[in-house]
Image 1 (cartoon, rainbow, N blue to C red):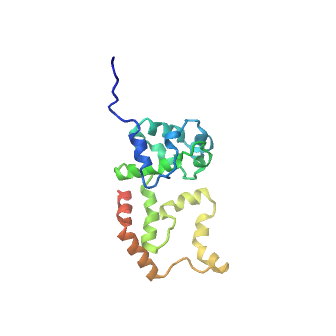
Image 2: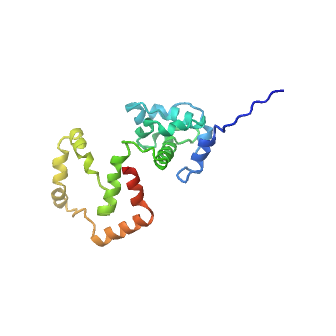
Image 3: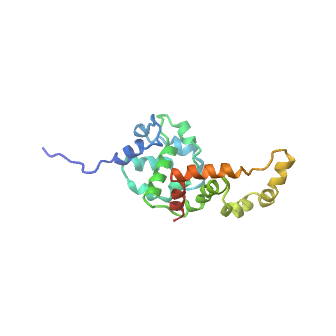
Length: 192
């Protein structure tokens, strides 16, 4: 009798994802039946070639090439896929973990670098803020956005909201905490 020995464990990638800190304890990744509900409601799939069902299929088949796939960067993290999955899988969470694996492996592409500006704002002003590199694109998409941004302090004052700026002492505390956990190093890695 001849036996076929499988040298490679196709579930190695899936198990790595399930053991990740970001994975929900009850994530039904291994229960996926490839029904396609996730793709049918996904805004990323509607606006790009991203396909959550295909991504999950590749993970379950152990195709680590999915980590290099540009399409994983088109997930919006809206969790719509998660909300409709009949077996409790979460393509959104899987995607987040795949992206982190890509970042950890240095497979960072031009889709990640611009977002480092969000991290820079935490280090610089103590709160998250839209990276300046996005301003012109926003102005193209939203008529008058640059005018709104330049008049924001005046608008806030009119509404009685006060300034957004937090005290320097608080900025230093935030900065110290972020540096202690290595946040600044991760931001620098994203920029590479």
